[in-house]
Image (cartoon, rainbow, N blue to C red):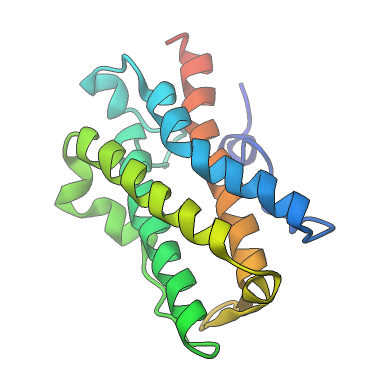
Length: 176
């Protein structure tokens, strides 16, 4: 059986790409464009008992992971917009684990799958409209310091693969 660190980080921990070029960003944007489709495929056919299975001991359930995508990516979208319209704004972090325990994280996943689809259509359109200088803009994170939008894009491309892998690796281990 895989150790807990492998289960927690099935694609490894985030590492910024060596380059932040238009070609690298195009790949990251494509990851975000494809996330709704890949997420829907990852959860296709799962029943409620499977959706309520944690991807690792002490980890979130598949259902919570799906709802977390919306919480996290909506926050990221707002951060992009703030950084594009203000000069290095200080953003408000949120307690992801506490949000995952709120009652709406136990609802059907369908509204979150629909939400992430619309959100990513808007996010991708915004990202594709950004200039080289726009990707150098950013925000101040109270815990992480200054985060450039090029870095934020890389984080959310990784985040998309990271949590999708939580679901697909659980399915593989369980034979679902």
